[in-house]
Length: 579
Image 1 (cartoon, rainbow, N blue to C red):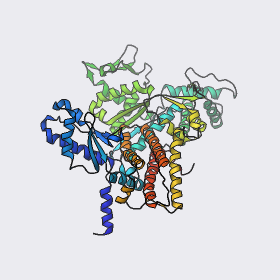
Image 2: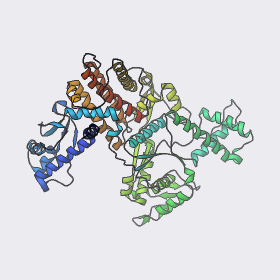
Image 3: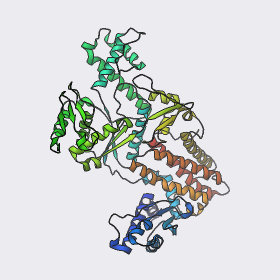
Image 4: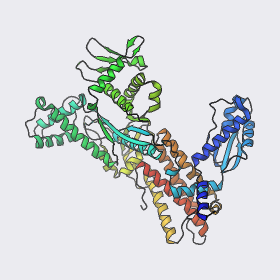
């Protein structure tokens, strides 16, 4: 057999990924359990392995014995013993199996497996280790979806970062992702925006304008009014040119929004206007809802004042809602329902909505209506809604008050300018889970020290890059091919600790993608940075007197650097080689 073929077979055999190993181990555990106890095991039972918190007890563990104790009416330690006996000759890449505590089955990875995983991470990158969960299926992700009434604010910034990072995570997991921005270009808010622009347009420059109640007071309206005069002269009136004011403001706002998004590197595949749904799609949705009856009554009814209502209470929601006002205009729930029906008609395998906490009730109402029209199972299988909490800016230890309509708010653009970096802005927004309220600390964001989470991680990447440069200058490089010798050279405590951390990264990233929880990536990055700093503090990496060990340790450096770089790439954050 040729050397080239031998090398290919070696590489393929060694490309056991953490996900595959866990799947095979769980299957082996499940098979062992059923071979011993047969029909006594429920059909839904699944043996699950997870990371061990205490390294003394192994690298991964299984609690199956304790879960089975009640079913089998036996001691979990005894159950664990019988399971491990059946596993002895069937588990590759595991160097030892032990039973600890009340019945934990603990597994220790072989040195060869850990070293080969680190080598392949360095050579192939994180992407090749992630399970292809999407398998080319299509997902539509709607996020930001701010109405075109002004610049994007800090709250929109959090949603934009969440949506873009979830999109990137799903792309990395094999999904074909489409990004969509839905906006309201009709209705009351657009009227108020147009009236606010008209008030500024008609007032003399430098004089106060009479802004309508609930109108928009931002300074950007003054700039738009000046541009409108320059383009159309001073002869426009609200009565005759209402549509001109509204469309001019909408165009200005959308250009401002797209410019703001570009600061974060975000591009949408489609901007979907509400006007595309009115009147036909909305009317059709109302007709379909009116044909549904609950307890002998239609879901749609009209009151004495001429308002049209949807009986959300019949769908399990707290109260009924007006869907058409007495003046014939739609409330926002009805176009939202029609929009989601349109999305379902496009046959995506999955649809993801990302909303702020102020949209929670609306989202639940829309979902209830969709379930009545399309069936609960179809909606629950295809639609996932992610709700994020609000953002508070903190400066000098004090919270900054914000209000969009009054003009007292911090824009996305101002935030990035104040922080000095879109990288820092994006990263910090991802240090908290979406459902948790966030205090964005401006003082922390400006710090150029390890207290700043993104600085800490980027510094680790730059430090590794510096080590690799120094090694290259000393004529020391990591080996081009994997061999068993590398495993034996990386058997020390700190090498194994770092390899174990690296091995867990693809598993954690896959879990973050499955749950659509991008904050997990910043946690992984922090662990990698801390793990590498600890490793580097305790071992000498570049040692001209011990070249073989140095070359092996460089494998870990390259693997750590590659994981940090790939993860920062998913976040849309730079991975600098120097700092």
